[in-house]
Length: 222
Ligand SMILES: *[C@@H]1O[C@H](CO)[C@@H](O)[C@H](O)[C@H]1NC(C)=O
Image 1 (cartoon, rainbow, N blue to C red):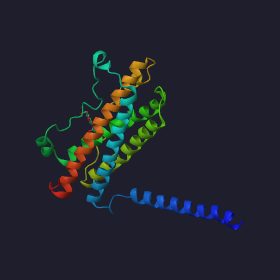
Image 2: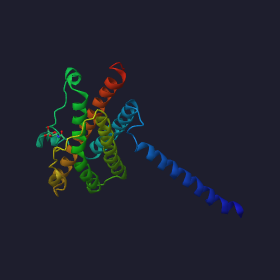
Image 3: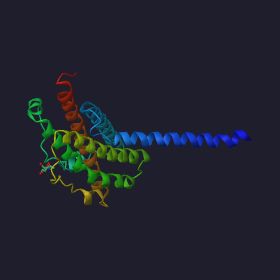
Image 4: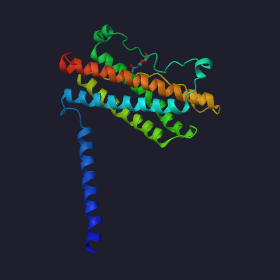
C-alpha cells in the first residue's frame, strides 16, 4: 500500500516544517534589540501583559468558583500582597507625573517579585482538593508569560540606556501557609496569591498601555 507508506512520511515533513517555523519565530522573537522598533516592542509587551492578566483573571475565577469560603470574611484578615511595599501611582495625575523609566522599573520590580511565588503556586495546584488540569495549565502559562514579559520590559528600559538596578525585590513569605496541612490555612494562602496576582498583572497591563500611548502615540490614543 504505497499510500500507507507515504502518508507518515509527508506527515513527518509537515512536522519538520512546523518545527523549523517555530524555531525561526523563536529566533526572531529572541532577537528584539537593534532590529525591532520601540513601537513594535511596546506592541509586543502590551500583548503579553494583556494575555498575562487574562490568564491571572481566569486562575482567580477558577479558584473562586471551587474553593472560596465566605466564612473567610468573618474569620480571616485579608493579607497584604507581598508586593504592597512597591509604590505605584494611584491617580491619573500621578501616572502622568511619573517618568517612563521609573514606571518601567516599578513594573519590573513587581514582575520579579512574582517569579518565586509563581513557582510555588504551580507546585501547589495539584495539592488542591480535586485539582483540575485546567488550573495547572493556566498557572504554568502565567509563570511563563511573566518571564517573557519581564525580558520585554527590560529590553525597552535598556533602550533608554538605563540599567535595571541589581536591587532586592520584595520577598514572598507565604510558603509555610501554602504548604500547611490545615486545609483552611492552605486554601486561604492560595486565595491570597491568586488575588494578588490578578491585582498586580492588572496594574502592569494598565501601566504598560499608558506608557505605550505616551511613548508611541504622544498620549493621543483612545
Ligand atoms: C523594589 O521595591 C522595593 C519596595 O519599594 C524596594 O525596596 C526595592 O529596592 C525595589 N527594587 C528595585 C530593583 O527597584
